[in-house]
Length: 197
Image (tube, rainbow, N blue to C red; front, side, top):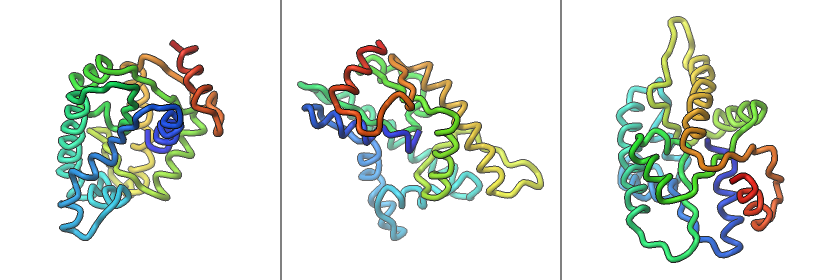
């Protein structure tokens, strides 16, 4: 999920010679014209463009976002890689479909950084404070007499649980986030991965 530390750890590995492919950046490039047309730019503005699941435009934009994410992943798989490469996926990669997730497993070692319940609560607060584009799939359903905010809070937590199950399904390695120190070195992180295989 967003805010778990994927990009931070990916950049750490760049210090020891890994190539970093950031899927968020590549999707943002594909959305650039659409964003400019409505006066937006940057990953935070992708969230504004997509909207929240109670917004009228959301499901159409979510579908378009996933289409771009699929394109990005297909292009990554086509590239010839001559050295260690990190595919820094979005949290929504599990919504791209079974075939795409199967391909990801085929082409790479999939590492799932698992959040504790306490971390999930912090991630939710961070999401509310600074929204990123989040694909809900079909996980958003607003109950009668429930405010948009109440629905979002309930469904986001459901989304975290549903995604956790999917991340585990496709992971080759599961590393609890609380076992990764904030200032972990690249070599210690690699050792942690190897020990988890």
